[in-house]
Structures are given as C-alpha cells and as structure tokens.
Length: 126
Image 1 (cartoon, helix red, strand yellow):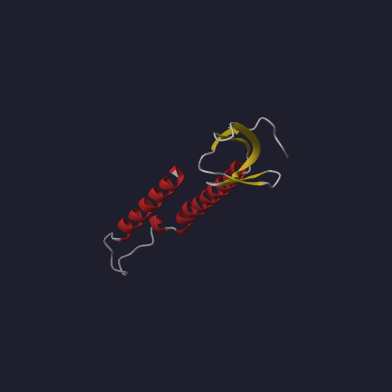
Image 2 (cartoon, rainbow, N blue to C red; image 1 turned 90 degrees about the horizontal axis):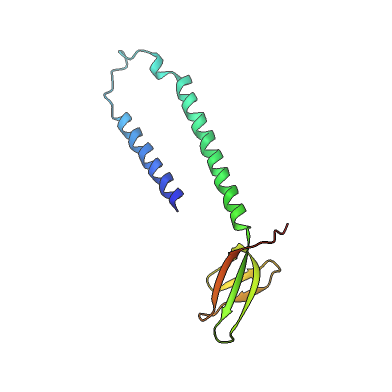
C-alpha cells in the first residue's frame, strides 16, 4: 500500500513539473537558437534510464509479490465449540476471508466462531 502511495505521489510530482516547464515564456521561432540545452541526446540520456529503472522496479515488485504469495505458512484452526485445533500448511495467496486451500488442494470453509492463527512454516517444500 505504501508503495502505491509513493508511486502516485511521484507521478503527480512529475506531472506538475511537466506542466510548469510547458508554461515557460515561448520565444518566437525566428529567435530560437539551437543551443546545447535542447539537445536530443540530453533528453535521451534522461528518458531511457528512467524507463529502464521503472521497468526494473516493476519486475522486482512483481517477482517479490509472486515469491511472497507462494510462501508456505502454517495455519492453525481453533474451534471453541469442539475444543480442538488442527494445523494445515497453506500458501499465503490461498488464505481468504471464509476459506483456505491447503497445499494438498483441500478447501476448508471457516465459520465465524473458529479462530485461525498464521505462523511461518518450519518445513520448506519445493
């Protein structure tokens, strides 16, 4: 969530800077000189690395979220009615509000009375 806020703020900041630079006083075409400030090489040196950095950041974010979603955790379901608890191994992405799916493919529906506890798994599966 914090990452989305930071990216949004950076986009807004870039838009504001772009709009301000576009409102600069324009000179007539006859008086414009081709100086080193308007060099296309300079703009390419800025734009291409920014595109590369944003693509790398996107790939890193996607890879990290995939890795985190596939992390196996131990979910303990405690039932106050039956006074028993059961432990299952579940991927993080398979934990939902009213249902979990174990790594074996078993779907378990949860009631409002059951309490679940999520802990990191000590056994790493391939």
